[in-house]
Image (cartoon, rainbow, N blue to C red; front, side):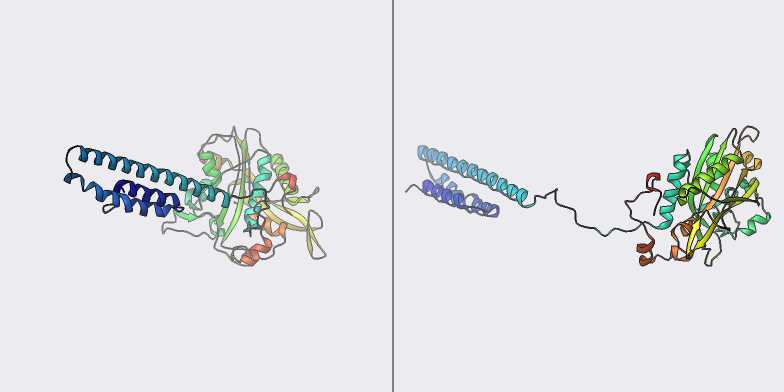
Length: 355
Ligand code: PHE
């Protein structure tokens, strides 16, 4: 039989029976590889003459085209099959219920910051931020607390440089300065964040959290401050009535200054906020001192307003019945899974802000 014809038949039956992609390459090299069956015949061409040579070469090339096109066809066929198989075996049923996932928990401090932000956000406050590392100017001097002022010693400051120019902020009040220096009045912001003082016992940790409030406009007075705090406390503790008292106090950056206590009592081992005759201090506040406004290029005869600073950790302890502040920062996963919050349970007023 014609050599070329038998090679073609041989190839046809082999390619016909291939069912896996990897085999195709083998067959290709068996026929068209360097030592392939058809390739070998090409080597005979130089020994032929005239018409014979022409016809032989023509037939060979036809056979080669035939082989190549069948290989191409088979490749497409098998690749298509593979994709189909993958598609059907990897199909997911999106109507199936999800598998339960073990969620991490939101730390009570984060939760309280979110709650505070949501409450103040609803009455027009936006959030401002400042760095933990502050300049002595922003933390003290601009806040009307010059060098040798006794208030500086009371803060147990962590200084980071020998010249005392850089420090860990001892309160969030420097964010007042940053806010005023970086924009024009009016200002209505809260600034939650970390603060640092060299102090540690059951109710003090060297790092703790405060939220600062600042509202400066043309006719802001102490009445607005009282109204806003009253609104906040009621919302935050989810109570209709709140006993609150303003005690005269002193801060270099406010005049007049006050500390605010809220009434509470202990009933059956549980703390009840807003009733009873015990008092708990929760924040410091006052009308921003004209010197502070001047230091921030704000004209005190046109603008004035109030500021306050609240301890966030203390709010969390009160609201969620946690009695050792140090446990907040021990990173104990058992503590967190007990006191932590569901990450999807985002605070909002229609949910009553937390538990
Ligand atoms: N910065 C003060 C403190 O840390 C609190 C405060 C803020 C008081 C704003 C008055 C006005 O104790």
